Amino acid sequence: MNESAAPRVDCRRCRRPLSTCYCAHVTPIDTRTRIVVFQHPREQRKAIGTARIAALCLPSAEILVGVDFEGHERARALLADADAPAVLLYPAPDARDLAEDPPKGPVTLVVIDGTWNQAKSLLRRNPWLQALPKVAFKPAKPSEYRIRREPSDDHVSTIEAMAHALARLEAGDPARFEALLTPFRAMVETQVGFAARVGEPRWRRPRPRRVRPDRILPAALRGSRLVCLIGEANAWPFDRALGASPHPHELVYLCAAAVGGGERIERMLAPRLPLSASPVAHARLSLEDLKAGRTVEEARADWHAFTRPGDVLCVWGHHALGLLQRDDLRLPERVIDLRALAGAVVGTRPGALESLVERLELPWQAMGLGRGGERLGMLVAVAEWLVAAARAADSHA
Image (cartoon, rainbow, N blue to C red; front, side):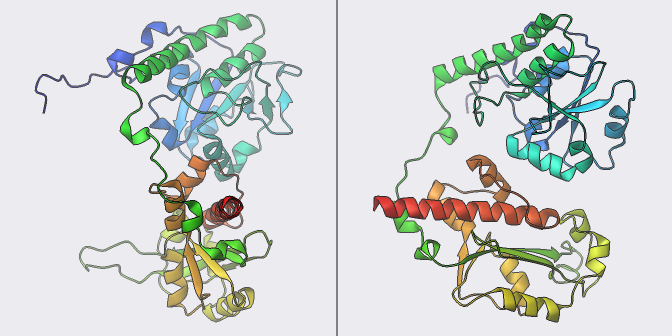
């Protein structure tokens, strides 16, 4: 250990190391527009995020961190001002173009801070936010966010989006919002300079691909009907006094879909054991739907009718398999763990399903209720990505 190395000291204001502090470039800008930022929790941990810069520059801005704001009193209060009605800054087809048709009076500008997939996830979890009137703009130039990849030239960072929107909402002096970008540019230049001096850290350097994809992608991806499976459980937490869970996990929600075929099955099963908090709190299933769920015998018959001889079952880990086996739901002879296969293809641990989909920027849509329906959509997206990789490997073999 280097005893002479001094501990890192962070700026209390911008929360960056003193060596990369951008506070000297921050200029407060008063606005008639109130700004409310709904920030995904993962974005809060990003050292090079830009919402913090905006909050320092704009006294009217407030950041709320979370995923589910349904019962968030502060969020509801901020968006309930009739004198400054809320509008959502989001590039939807029905969004008003701020350059051509800006709102006439003061508004509360709602901004989503996170990656593209995180933003879509947050809106799905909060339909009341998605129902807000939407506004958008077309950037005049690509993003200056050189230290973080944007999906396309039409996408910009959170603070750039705010600067664009405010320049159109407060047309009296749009040039003053250039000051909003000064600390942002300083942060970018500092990070670029640091990378030039020390290079990429080891954990960010791409690892050499040692295995050819055509040798690790199974033949089952090349012609069989692939069925993606997700299962949600009535799961009790571990009890230290008992040395185990009070009750075994039991299947309460089953959803599956054939890749590329459109066939899908979704079944709710009534709990047979005392109901834990997990199906409602974590799986986001309604208590009414659970109580009205089918019997195990009915779900078993429906599942057996849905599956076919020769199907290949695609799962993420083995949690769903264990749930089906406990209730004697027949499984196809061939099963592929897409988590292990995806890890082999990308050359590293894939992490959570949500993380891999976000990293690969795979398009997906929910295919059922609650968390299980979202995860099924993601699993199908991963399966389609692997099928495309298998076909590409075949064409180059």
